[in-house]
Length: 164
Image (cartoon, rainbow, N blue to C red):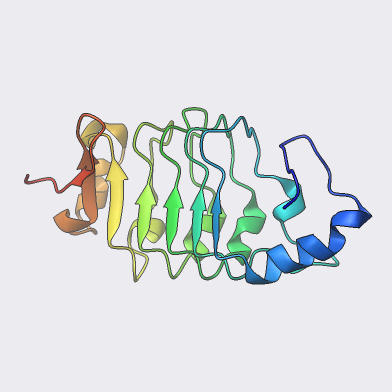
């Protein structure tokens, strides 16, 4: 293990560890920290491919204000936890390339719009919201997305379908 905080740049001593992280890490939970941006040390570079095996990414409850476009490299991503990221206003273009994504947790975040291209990703089974009014385009999405895909969290509990 080595410490990584949002302001630290990895040095040469961490290169080997970074290579191991990049190629084999499948779950990364950075929940409840003070990350304002995704740590650059974990993104692809000219020497490293990035988090190509990542299946679970938890950035929930961080003051993140944007997602890096390089997250598109996470082709295996199945679960993305962004709940409680109140400063995060939108999903960027990279979200359209998460073809393996099954769960998108955005309740209690600043995200007020989910593009149809993201909501209709082929494997996406669940978009977890606080309430219908969270998304300004909720009614538009309902034309393209089944009711079972849009879930709501009630009183801090687990996801509930819209009819429960």
